Length: 568
Ligand code: XMP
Image (cartoon, rainbow, N blue to C red):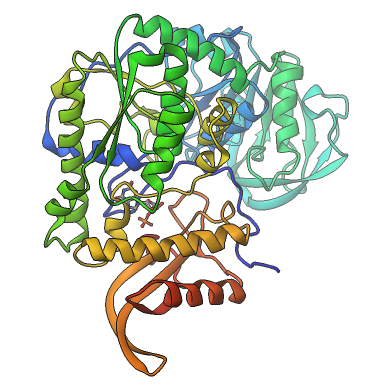
């Protein structure tokens, strides 16, 4: 059956950010959300531990960020070619870059115009290092401007598809490309003259210099090779990394694991590490990696807030305690959270209450462990780097452990963030290589406040049970239909609406359950999934038949925006 609206989904989901009224959270968000909320409790920031930068025959390509929305994507594409890549601001000093052993630079696109007085330009070391350089869009204009060519506002701006014709078939940058291929353009300025020593390597109808290059291994692309609309883009980036920069391609998750085990061991020594385990991808991978490195010096604290889905706590415990033999402190704090949520109906008050309670429980348990030196966190690369939005100074801003608050300050812990250089898809791969179950690795995101924000109004034990049963059916049917991984999220909501129904000879007055299934790339926008009618019918039938107290099911057909994914 064709399911409309989910064809374009990839399993490779970038990190998610929450909507305006929500707490900004990282990758798989569960625990970090609580820690984020804890910020409001106050306290100083902890000292950051020495970072575990991978060391295997170090080689890297550096993306110099001029503020393009695609800068991080370039880094991802390069990493997909098995070459380590970092994104740095254009004003980063050479001393910070040198330790990475750069093999080449990519100058990103950006919103500025090179001929404007304040336009960001490439630092001198880029050219003086004699390393290969690839300028993309604005990056190409920067090269042109700095090396003696001429950039002017285009008479015909080019946005969208164009056909690239390769004129220099023997250029290593364009090796293995067809004579013509589609590319994605997005530029208002154009190259009127390329710098001396450069030649045009390819052209489009509107851009005679769509690709340029020099014998010094400096190249420019007028289009964006990093986006999916440029089908040969990855080949071009691969050519740059391998044929021009001479990279070996040693950035594999296997190597990452080997390096991390070594660096974690070095860093921790005889110390003790504590980790808040949630069962989400990031916290699970962090725990497993650290456990592999230092065994029982790691203690995981798993707080059951009573807002988890059916069997969730048991399954998580089973994997980590039973199968992986980790040292886990399990706290069933369900009653405590329920008590705290009594009478609370406002969504944000719910979130805050849950966050604060989590911190208290976590702190209590952590203090029982004795002296602890490190707090492990599942911070990912996109959490660390945030490209400045267009128009502002183009810089890669470091959000220092943004999701840690009062907790570690009071406990004076150092942070251990072994995933801070990884993208989400890399984290998943690490998890798989460490032997974590697929089910855990491909888990759909689940909000930190759990079922509490899927129960409209006050959270009670009875309502939690109803929602767990309905949610179980949704999940079960979605998985049976093999749609689980294609959907960003799929779940049930227990509304506070009751309606009249009829069952047999009786009138009923029961709850209305809503089903939500969305497709999304990053949770910033989402569309409702066009689930097959038969599937919706099965879900609805099963819920009203199997979940007592529910007599009506509706399917949410609103996109985000204007809606949000969650109902609260
Ligand atoms: P919305 O509902 O804002 O959700 O479209 C976007 C993504 O964020 C998740 N979400 C949360 N995650 N704490 C979390 O850890 C929260 O308070 C929270 N609110 C929403 C939501 O499940 C979706 O993936």
